[in-house]
Image 1 (cartoon, rainbow over the protein chains, first blue to last red):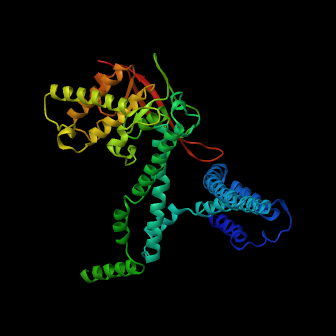
Image 2: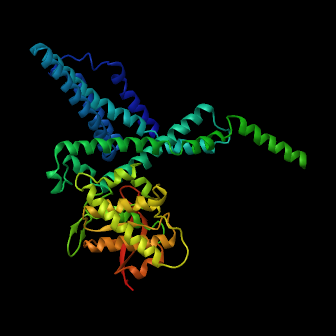
Image 3: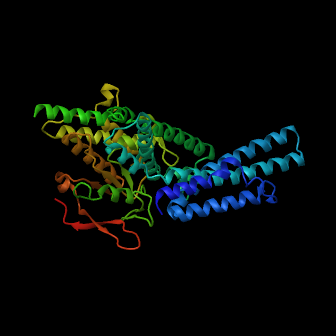
Length: 247
Length: 201
């Protein structure tokens, strides 16, 4: 199956996520907030990613979705329930909150992998190569797209892998008690460990931003020198006519 | 560990130090310690994650800043002695105490100190002469070797430069071959082979 058909299928599959139709209209729910419509839609989306993009891409998309969904949902629910405790515990409010956060978790766990797949299915490197070699030149919007895709590729294939390598080498995850944990780290107080994790996250954030934009001036210069749409053709014509004049 | 450019030396270093995401586990089994090695990247600027010298010297959850600074001072002293004992030309990059600015050598030294302070199974130096003059690089490596061997940590030196050869107890050359896997997907598969070679002075 070629990428255009895959892209069409993913974009078509995204219609219910954007419009809410028909997933919001299906009656019945397994749990409060977990309607049958959304559960079936989530199963369909995950099956499609697995079948069309393969196990490796599915694992990555699911991992990213979990990394975003779990903190957002837990933090949101924690804040809401803390507020509920302060203003006075109410059974009806508690049910409303529970339904809201279950719905949020299902929606995020469905929409994030779908959005990643919609981008991942596009062969950006091939499109970039096609644009750079096109004899008729490059439009302004296409130059912007080239710049965006280059920064995106740089982040995906250079910045993130490098940061991950440094984190793995430093056993930085041991600070939060992963399988890499050493015997010594158990004696470190939790407060100090969490402080270390926070500092590390700040460094990673700063490094990620700086490394992502490191080559932007170079690429901007390079891409701005590409011939504009129609310009290359005119230039070629002009060169041909001057050669004829010389002859 | 020697080998031409692109043969996979840095990949081996990353595997040994646990920096690589991979199936299985590569570990060092030494006479005194066994486990995963620590690595000084070739591109140390990336390895810093833009952390300042003081942040790197402050240690981590498993290592105190005092230990890191103590190892740092040892390496710095050994470096100065080795650098001054050598003849020839070459910029001394270890002049931070005088200028107040930290050089690439200081960053390399503090990264190595932080790793040695954690007593790893081995210390891997990936192209340690990157960004240094030959004289400075030789002084730096000999200083790191002295500090590491004092605490019983073996050092694995990765380089494609021949002049490290006499310093090595043993040698491994890395070669890479590529082949197209026929079925089910026509993917290019790289095989990295490690050959034991004779080493030592």
